[in-house]
Image (tube, rainbow, N blue to C red; front, side, top):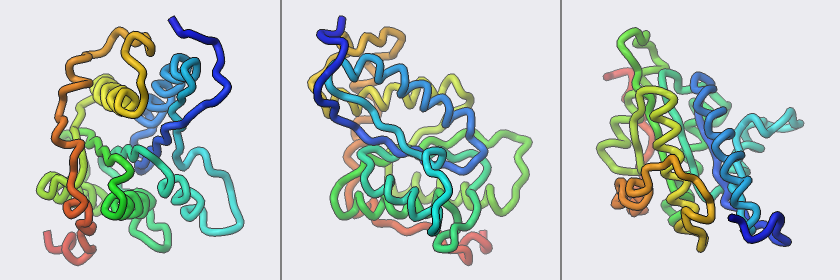
Length: 220
């Protein structure tokens, strides 16, 4: 049971969620997950602070610039891709691409944030258009360079399980809390502590790879 119902000082683990608009269900699932976890965490003086494009309203400047500020200060970068790459921002080929480049650059310089990528299975009915070509090219580069922790998932349930385990692992690494404190029972706990641990130690050299150029994509 929690030791207190409130805590005078709340420390935040900042998580930024990046994706195009075709994974709305997955984005909502992450928000539900974080809300439930924070009910336990805040009693111990911690919370996961979730940021994404939904949290930014209209501004007088370039909208993506305000979103980028959250990328620059996050502790965890969670990227989700399916069939779409996104729309150009003016400075990059998509919002996701710009956010990824910022997070990747930070990691290369400082070792932060943790870089997590989740690729939803495309399926057999996907239209092989330019958007999907961008996604496929990016995934190939990630797999070949080991630039970040990455996983695939087939459906929402599998996504929730994988991301939940990863978030819990990050919480345990950054706090003195245990699974008993958080009180979450329906989790594959051995996987939280064991699954793909080498992927957490991505080298900064590997994290410095660039996204493929449009010319390279058009030749594939």
